[in-house]
Each structure stands twice: as structure tokens, then as C-alpha cells.
Image 1: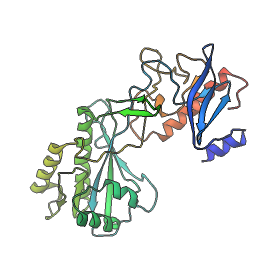
Image 2: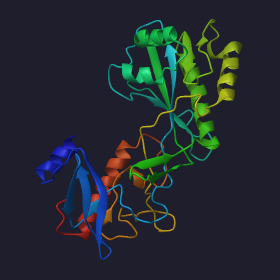
Image 3: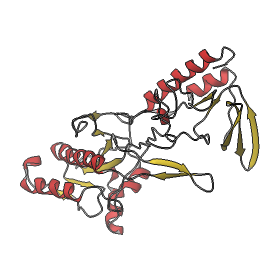
Image 4: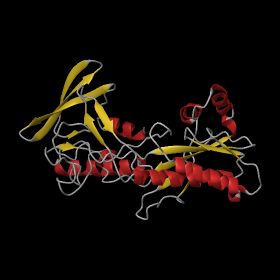
Length: 310
């Protein structure tokens, strides 16, 4: 929020509940936008335009969409944990980050897990089980398995002008999730959980009934069942909070949507400055990378136009 305050102090203005419908292009240069705010049309003229939707024809626009597919694994402990207290994303492990040997795998992270998230990711078996999972929230430790997806999807404009997403987790990226889920279950059992479970609809919870921990033959059988069931559409809950790559940056218009400066190949003065310019999915949460890229592109805009107020 402090960046918004800085922008305001330097003369920036903000419009809420607004959508950019079309970029105004004159003689091959972006000169403004036409948009809608609460049902009313508006036009803004500008010397530089920074957008995430533009109507350009470069075939790479909308392709290479990466989402960091995420699954949850849960452990129930005797002691109270209060997983919604304290800082978010306080710890992670890289134990599953390189499943394929080429830098693609999963990060296992400890999130701040509030009741709303629990309600979404606890799988439905029956009313009593669901109620129990909600009532036991204070004793639950959640781990998220955040995969770095190699194989992307796409986003296109629908007939109504709204985006339509086409994305299926590939076999390669499914293996990353499987490895991360299995590792997460082992971490929770080693930490002393009395029960563990996944977001897979047809895999029951596992109750720890011996002191053998991860060496328990029954637990090893459970891990094999989890991996065998895998992550299938309609049978496992998958989430995403990171959208990247659909206007990826590069040095060739045949393989990218924007230049290294963030400017589109087709139109001068039209820039993209968010996570959609990522050439590939990042290996970690993309917030700081997105900030850095936006700052870098802002410097390129300033360099290209000395009159810029950025």
C-alpha cells in the first residue's frame, strides 16, 4: 500500500471498479484507453499506456500462462497450534523443488490458514466429518505444496470480452505435486501429527498408530496410495494465487509478447508491467520479482520519455 501512497504523492490518480476495454492506437502508437466504470464509458488520453489487456495480434499474447498449481496437506496435532495466528509464509523447505532435475518441482510452505481457507480446502466426505475438520482448526497444521509449472495454459477473450482460461495440470507438473504432497505428509508425521490427510477426494486420512513414524510400513503403503491416486481433475482440490507468463518478455517477437523493456513488439508506447511478462514460472512466490520487474519497466518508460512523471 505504501507504493500507492508514493504514487499519489507524485500526482497519480486512481479509478476503482474500472475495466480497460480497448487501447487507443494512432499511427502505431498507444495514445490512451477506453474503459468502463460502473457501467459508464470513459476515455483517457496518455503519452504512455501500461496495460494487461490490449487486443494486439502477437500470437504469444495469452499463451504460456503459468499458475503455480497448489495443493494442501494437513496434519492434526494434540497440542493447540492456531495456524491463523502470526506472520504468513513463515517457513518453507526446498526438499521437493527439483523433481525433474531441471529446476522444476514444488516448494512446501507454511501458510497462515484462516477458517475461510480451511472451509475451501477441506475435502467433503459427509457433514459430520466436515464439521469436525472445522472444529479442529486450532489443532491443524496446513502445508501448501506450490509447484513450479513447466507446461502452461492459455487465456483468451470470450465472446463477451471477458477472459477465458484454458489450463490443465500436465503429467510433468503433476509429478511435482505428487512428490511435494508425499514429502509434506512425511514432514507432518515426523513432526508428531496424530492424523494426516490430503485434498484428494478418494484418499482417506491416515491415523498414526505406532511410534515408527515415517518408517511405519502402513504409512509407507499410504504414501504409495496417495501417489498412485495422483492429482486428477474432479478428484483433488487445486488452487492458484499466482498468474504469470501470458505476455512473456523476450528478445524475439516470434517467441515473446513484449520486449525486455516491457514495451509491446507491435505498438510503441504500450507497456506491460506485471507478472504476465515472466518468461517462465518463478521458482518461489512471485511478489518481489513482480515488484522488481515493474520498477525496472518504469525506469525504461522514464528513459524513453523525459516528460514522464513516473
